Structure formats: C-alpha cells, structure tokens
Length: 263
Image 1 (cartoon, rainbow, N blue to C red):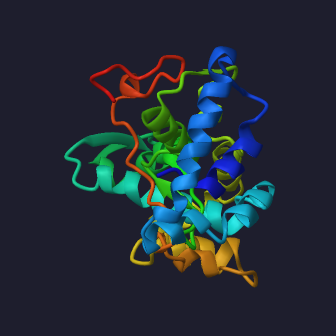
Image 2: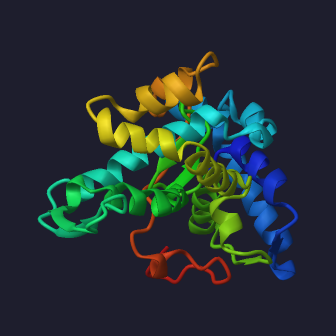
C-alpha cells in the first residue's frame, strides 16, 4: 500500500526531474487515485505509517542537514570500520626515521604503523556514499539501505506497472535532497581540520571510542552532541527502508515497465 504523505513529499522533491510518459498519465492517475481510496481499509499499523507525522518537517529541514554532529558520528564510526578491516593484518612495512642521521630503516607491523591510519584517512569519507537520509529514526542516516525515493518509485511501479523517464543522474534517485553529497564534502573537511587529533588518538588513545575522543571532546566541545547516541531504530509510524541492492546492475530500470515475471 503506497504511503500518501510520503508520495507528496517525494513529488515535491523530484517534480523537476521525473516525467511520466504522456500516453499513460490519465490511466495511471486514475489507477493511483483508486489505490489511495483503499487507505480506509488499511490496518491500524498501516494507517499510522501512512500518516507519518515527521515527513513534512523532515523534507522542509533537509537543507539544514547534515549537522556537524551527524558528520562526526559517521566519520568516527567509519574510521572504526576501516581500522577493524586491518586490525589482524600480518603485513609488515619498512619505515625510516628522517631525523636519524644514519637513515636506518626498520621493519614494523602494518597494523601498528602510521601508514595505516594515513591511508584510511585518505579514503574513509567515500564510505559516506553508502548512507541514505531516512525520515523517522532519531539519527537520520542509515547505511546500506535504499533511498526513500527509490523505494517509493519501485513500489509504485510494482503496484501500477508504471514506466518513468528520469531526466536526471542516478545520484538524484539515491540522494534527492543532496544530503549525502554534503555529508561527503563535510566529512572530507572534518578529516582535514582534525587530522592531528585523529593521529593523536591513533597513537595514544585507541582505548577510547572516537565518538567520545574526537566528536564529544573536540569537534563538538560545548555544543549539542545528542546525535552521537541517537537511535537508528525505525519508529512504528514509519516504513522501514529496504536493503540496498548488493549488485548495482540489479537496480530497477525505471524507464521500462515491469515484466510479467516481475509483477
């Protein structure tokens, strides 16, 4: 059952880039109207989802997100994710102390090297591209899920067998409010601004989570840090996002109606 409030929100966000094939406009509009008339037959749970009390405010405030708190939380969590990938590495590297007159090099484990954190800081912000802005949770950025817009389009096509022509890049389907792009840019700036703080943590304070050491105590010092512990649980009135397609080639092609086997 389509979410009428969510559809209104998505229509406003993407009206400039979505064009429904003209030959199907009237037919699809009537079918859509008929579908919406079935709301009265919804279960109580579905009615709560359809009413989604935060969707309008969420859309209106999109330009204010992400906050510095949002960005630092994602950065801290992704730094830990990347560090965990190499924490058991058996690789060794040769390092040289440039202040040593003899210019002697020594072999150390990669997992204990400065090179490890330097390489991670160079690429960690690319991980932000796996996040999507989702209305409902206290913390609005969820990882490895479909965008609300993509999910709604797929549901509409599945229910009405619509074919849509998207005169826009694929990124706008995944990130119609451009929040993920801002998240990425702000993440890069934060890494540059706090490179020394991250390096200091890596050398001496790894027993403290970066959410506390970097975000709470440094980046957000004397400012609101409530988002650091905000829940990512989906409230009962909101529709849970579906997992993102693991294979990009399997993403729905909106320019074609569903085949009989897909219906």
